[in-house]
Length: 522
Ligand code: AMP
Ligand code: MG
Image 1 (tube, protein in one colour):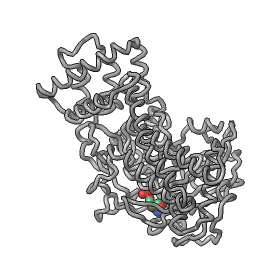
Image 2: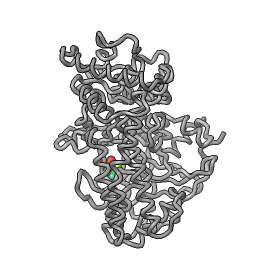
Image 3: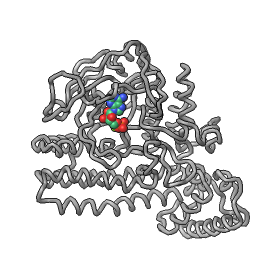
Image 4: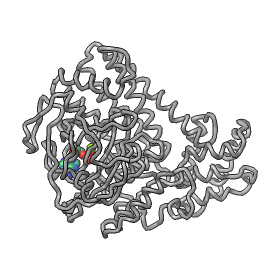
């Protein structure tokens, strides 16, 4: 097995694309460049507090024995051979409005390294200090948000949802000030750095900023770089290659949305700068996991007035974001706007196909009628059913017990104490129809159960579970971070002694900051 400092790094992005090498890290507008070379700002006493063995194994990387030297690398204090740190320049539409230049204000890419299959992966530190894109920020990240990103990105991977990964979590030893709800109550919090890993961190916004500034040459270069490195299956050339790229990004984004809707994930800040061009989940901020089924739920208090990024709107917001990307690409394809529109018009159909396939699997069926699903979700909403527990309960339900009395799992997964007689009848009617379809499909019960278990996780990073891990970590106890990291490696398999992690959200967590409400302050 390798040690961290055995890894060889290269600089794919910066070698291929034009950049800013002024080494002026003051926040400013960076024109005619896709990135700026930067240096991580040293931290005072880095300490490694969590490590993903599962991701490390992909690089044949051993858990560090010398934690101090690993922490120095994973905080940016020590650079390894071949690392040429940079921050990317990107723009974005935030909450529906063009925000011009944003960029990596606190993320610094160290370099790319090859896995044993010779696939290239970018290592990036989040919270590594000031960059030209920091605007008014301090370039740092706090422990609570870093724990949330670390645990959730690893959990998403094991849930089978496309995502960036996280290798490590390091405490910086420095404090940072944050006003968690922007309400004039700042507090001093521990700083932390996550080492994120992805094939690429390019976002829709990297293209948008070049288009907005009319940097046409650079836009061509970034499109070609993206195709060559991440979409090498595209064999068209010239303009057709760009169209094919956009079609594939659209397809992957639709697939990602269907997964989020399957597992109950709410991103919380689907701005175009938080949309990956690889169709992976990126930038874990004030995200949340749906508990009682409510499509209008958003965990992000910053989003509360309009609920733009609520659970149910995610697929249509993704389309809105794809339209912004299409507008950027149209700058280099002025004669092909019809073709771009045609691709966008396919999005809904592509999404629905993925969505219905996944929903059918959740129900243990080969296909499902949209009307039946609508009926189900409307019942779930009326009775405040926990999304995760309902589907898991349904997968374990023995149909031979019939529906004369309401199955136990229904009551057990509801946040209501009682169902009205009318609601009970509506459930019985739905379940009866469901049983008939199941019977007609004729899949042996054991196989159906397995199929349903593979589509319906038992353990998800419920906000209150993360909050408990965070509160302990803020006292210096990282045990729960480790427990959750391990637990979420097998989210679909019942684990001995882990019953407490597969329960309904307790009452105390219903309105607790961090458990039910979050903000962009991180
Ligand atoms: P987000 O909402 O986290 O996606 O961030 C939006 C923009 O704000 C990105 O350009 C981030 O790099 C930047 N940003 C967020 N927090 C900080 C911070 N503490 N310091 C500097 N830039 C930040
Ligand atoms: Mg972001």
